[in-house]
Structure formats: C-alpha cells, structure tokens
Amino acid sequence: MPQPEKELKVGELNVSLQDAKGVFLTDFTGLTVEEITRLRREFRKVDVEYIVVKNTLARRSAQNVGLEKIIPYLTGPTGLAISKTDPIAPVRVIYDFKKGKEKPAIKSAFVEGQMLDQDAAEEMRNIPPRDVLLGQVVSGIAAPLSGLVGSLNALLTNLANVLDAIKEKKNS
Image: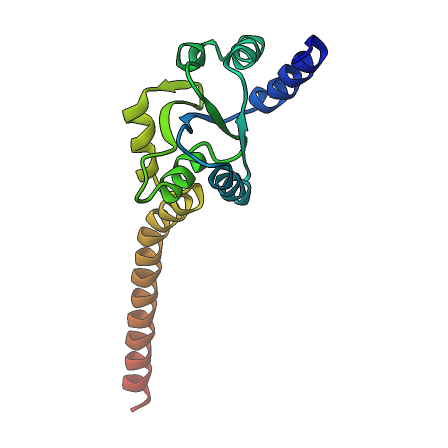
C-alpha cells in the first residue's frame, strides 16, 4: 500500500476511534468473506463499525488518539468493532453471531476508558442494554412513589367516609 493510502487509512481510523465508547478487538481467522460480510451487517444494525486493518496502521492510529492501551493486543489478524453510542453493543452482536462457532474470538476490549482482558470483555455480554437499565432505575424509583400515592389515596377515602358518616349522623 503506497504511503498516501496508508496515511488516509490511518486518518479514517483516527476518526472512528476518536469518539469511541467501546472498542472490541477480535480475531476473525477462520471466517469466510461471506461470514464477515454478514457480521458487518449485524454490527451496522446496532450502529457499530467493524474494521479489519493492518496492525501497524491500527497501532499508529491508537497512538494518535490516545488509545495506547490496545497496542499490545494488536497482534495477528485483528478486527476492530467500534461503537460510538452503546459501549457494549459489539459484544452482544459477536456472541449472537458466533453461536455454535468459535470465531470471531474476542481478544480484549477498551470500554469507557478501561482496558479489559478477554474474560472481562466476554462477561460484558451479560449487562442489559442501556434502555433496559434505565427502565429498571425508573421502576425502582416509581414503586415507592406509587405506594405513597396509594396510601395517600386510602387516607383521603377514609377521611371522606368519616365526614360522610358525621354528616349522616347530624342529618338524622
């Protein structure tokens, strides 16, 4: 690859990595071109970019954007699954895709400023999506509030019944 093309590729990778919330490094050996295409299609559905690039270019780009922590993992065939929105979306796609297969294998991940080894990166697939977590927080807050509303409503109903009984007693 001529030098200007390499610089262009590094520049494109810089843009992709610069605002990344999650970067998963994968080993894609053993996958056919058709399987990689299908994997990329699945990644696009959740707004994740999957890039296969030479390790030397990836190292240069990682240094440019301050992701030096991923450099030791840039060995052998490496694909980068980059998410700018949901930092753990790539791991879910990878595990859904590889059911019954061993590839692509996760080498490591860089999520929200933290470098994760293979085991920690794989465990992230058990974390629910962001909207589910937000729903759980809202329901956790709403449950006590709805109990309070129910109690206040019961008190008002009892007060109305007592006032009604007093009114009936005075009228008779």
